[in-house]
Image (cartoon, rainbow, N blue to C red; front, side):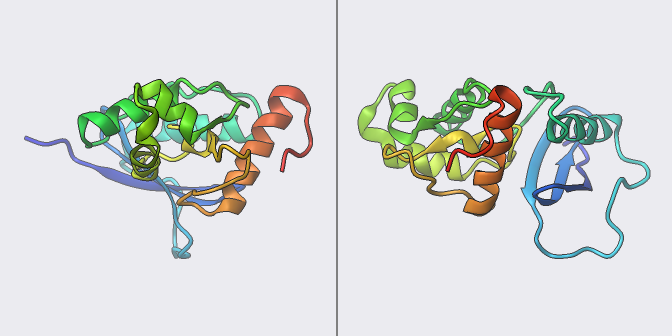
Length: 166
């Protein structure tokens, strides 16, 4: 029997986050630009989703650099590999799509890596926002480039005291 998936919302500094998961894992963190009537911590959600919100609060306050939550995303073996590599990018650091392709073992797979990066359903926790263009420009982010810029500047400020990167 498949796990029951629950959903709650968190009002973050980068907008409303939709958080979905079961009692055992988080399977989605996405940006929800459509205003919901009564959003917030809903009753009868598993403790793991509450823990996820608590870790987001710590992250946005600058008290957490790494999430400690079980994650589950459906995807191909290649996508799973890319998502694992994303988890290894340190807080406050960025890499290029080419570097990410190198890490997966194929420098010719830059486009495939970018595609897998874009299919990440667990925003921020699986830090696809830390991947930038080879020319150090901000490119490609499902949540919008303004959010990517905000997240990177937030991490740089927490990690290094840097005010702006881009």
